[in-house]
Length: 322
Image (cartoon, rainbow, N blue to C red; front, side, top):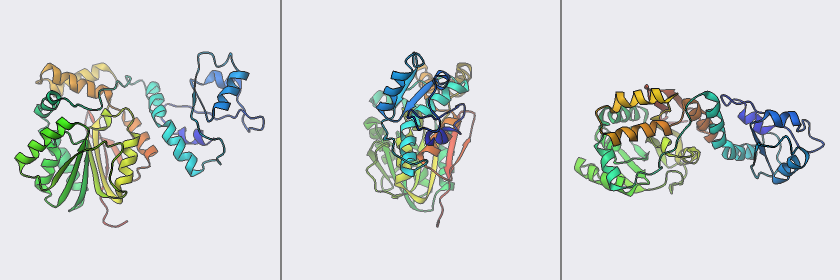
């Protein structure tokens, strides 16, 4: 019943809970199994019981064992946390398949060749980066420790550092070549005293709990097969009163809209750059999927909205005291 409660507000899904034990309040039936597109069981023994009692009803069905001990009380906090972690990526996938949007197609998590870094850095994101920097500054403190996750070639922190000299910017990325080029850009801009570039996986950061006053990130989410570990890390390393400013592309409803966006915003780019933008749109999440993941990660007080014809934004202003 806890899993049903967690999933009941996910857009496009219908969820039912039932037990395999004789004493279960609601027991599994052939009808329920026939109705389900996807079946989750807590322990292997539950799957074995279903296979033994309802072999015909399970034909062609996908049964996933979550490997969670079936000894928790209803809505017990530890169970809720475990279920959210286990079900997170499945919820996004299932919601996506029901909404009519084109299916998500992953692109590489890391653009790590020198050629890719140079190609990316040569694309003109000046207007988008300036808008991002302006909004981040408005939401953040006057001074403090700021984390930029997925910094790329550091164009955004450079723009921020020029306006907020009291910000200490820790800028992380998993691409050594992006950071190498970023260091050149930082040195040329003469802001090395403010910006520290680090080769770090944003899904498993080495920083202490409640360390940063603000976390910002532009276009990292669509690169991640499963963004939940990153979002949980954001919650962990951010101070309770800390600011959040995340922005990324959202996935268009169909290929025609995607192709129109590519021509509108990358029409003057070369064929490889156009393909990069198209792939990024196809790898992005819908707004509903982002909202589900934010809730699952436990990020509270965050405003999530469509901020352009191709971007979503998640923001929370810095608060001096809670």
